Image (cartoon, rainbow, N blue to C red; front, side, top):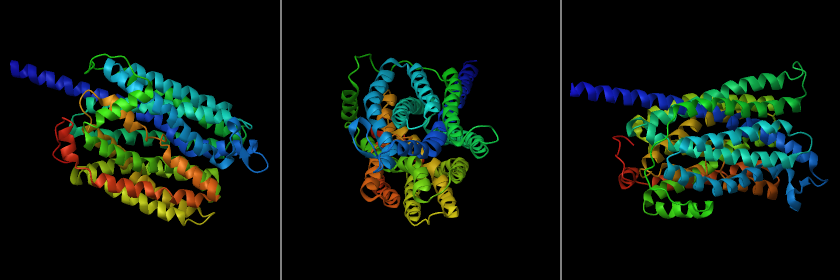
Length: 449
């Protein structure tokens, strides 16, 4: 009788864990449409065109009296969004760990971001300042929400399941991005048939991403559950002080900090490629919006297979080796992108295919690997630092991209400058002994890592 009771309890726990995992996947399904349709495809070229309408005769806009080349405004806005995130994320992460109330904080962040994205419908004419403000709010909110979402991973998946669970989450996100992007492509290409102009079609696509984000966020909010706080309640420090406190705590786990440094470097490059690729394609290569959407759709479709495929590779070769292989592929891809001829979409599609095959896996495996390095009870706090360079929230890459363009006037020079992030990130990650790092964090070491 006792054995049967234990088996029933274990079965109930496994069933509850799977239910939470399925709900967890759906937040990626909800918010990835923002990353795909808004940040990657539509907002960069559209906000750049809006800024150009407001520019002076020399091609400059003047937000708060500061002269900024119109072509750099989008990249600078992405960089500014991290300032808001740096202040807010550590504070929210520490509060979530102290109180155990991640779910209401996740919901609040998600709906702030969804509302800002929906409001992008009103981004018309020369309202570039409105566009920059909404981008900063949406990006910061998404970063906070993703930090809380990622911090659930070590709680809903045992060590041996995390690579697979993380990869499935990314695959869900890319599948949603592909589905909505197909609808967006139909609306954009056939906007005359729907009785709207091209600008209105773009603004509808932007706003629909916010509605999708808010609607599907209900599923994880219904299925995820809060856990009792693992640490005692204390007064929260201001955001920057809390970040400093988190970093000081990480100094007790130097190998975790070493992995995080490597991740922040190479993922800065990944996120900058994601956020600036459409600008590169439209401004430097002279490709039309329909070509850019098609290329991003190809990335989304291949990223589903890439995330699942690299998850399987990790079972054989380990997550660290698989990530290192993906960074080598990123370096070669960017190098090839520098030499793409203008006005030739075939090369851009080949580049998109290469990115798609490594994109999802490199991100999913980085997330699952980091989850092994987080001390128990510090999940949200540590993931706040992790998230600072995730999903378009990187700041140094867009800043370098924008400055390089500002100085040279060449998007080719700007895109090739990002190679440094992948080379340096590769070297830093190669030096991290991940098995020892997992043990030092107080977590069980998986058989294959």
